[in-house]
Image (cartoon, rainbow, N blue to C red; front, side, top):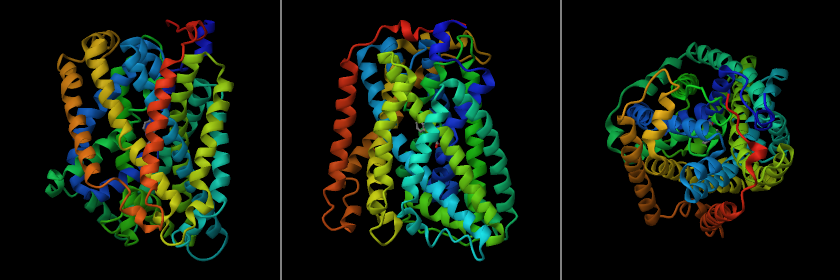
Length: 507
Ligand code: TRP
């Protein structure tokens, strides 16, 4: 191993990479957001858009991200700079700042799952129901999540401390464990009375919603998030691959593992929700569904079975941890590539910015405004930031990535480079998919989103719930826009450190 290799890191094995990448992909997105989206967009109606999104956008974009990382052997901004120039680097940094924002509230949501986990253990010792549900708001509005934010940031730093080495070790333990736990939950869910009804709801084809634009938008965003695309995560992970790796097969494998897990999770959650007669109202938003309805469904397990509720929240925490480390590793590798700083220094910087951010969302006074937990400031703040950082950035980055790589770098060049070391070969059709079809599809979705925004600026309706907070949606948008666009142009302009410190290895 040359010193360059040890400095930047390289996966120990192909299995290690597949586990780490699928650990990144499998997370809160698969367990709670998928079920919530599928429910919100009408169960069976969700599948056609979902599969179109998988084959049309998901797998192809994962091949592009894996390919970019493997061939450029750099983090996302540096890869984009090398492949497509300064404009590419700008979008690279823009995505990294969004990644940091998403990382912040992703860890806050994890801290809520951890708080519920602690709560679920209570009933094992006492009588009565697991009763997480009714006291959900109270748990969130206590200091417990804030304490867990600190613990979870600590764990993230430990798992990231030695780069690929510690990430790989974490994935090797947690990823197989997630599958085992999920299978236990599916078996339990399906064996409950009425459990199968939920499965029917989930799988009964329903083509009514197929002309509804929001279903498509929901499926596309869900796919990007679930496969960890659009934030440079997969580029960073694949930049640690040896040159000979077959990324086409790997992309197929990681997507397959991710979507199978998502399906199984959907079955588990729907069977449990229906068994406990929890039918959320159609107005329940994704976050409310994910963070209130699903947890309260899980919490319905009688005390003797509170262990299943515990299992569910434990599963959420470990699945979320292998994802949060990947979200953070993207900006970490980006900063390291740009400034050639030691990993410890970059970890400290990221924690210094990110931990206070996560805490803001988790503070009890943010959440304790009475009423429904979905109507609290913290959740509103999170929801508002999520709307921009998640709702727009993944698709915008996917669009620019497809255009820059498709036309700038040249997708046929990338395709030839990847085909050379792949078992499956991509044909010329792939070029047009990346150059034309994907940009058009994403643009249509984005244009409709923006048009919707002009009609009613996101959050303005909701924030009327609180006196005097009508300015909040605009403030969050302006803050986000300045931080991401301003930050990215500053970072792009700063001079690149000499690359010898991070020189790649050919192996
Ligand atoms: N895919 C993860 C999930 O489903 C979240 C995630 C990790 C992610 N890395 C990402 C989402 C990069 C978008 C981009 O929970």
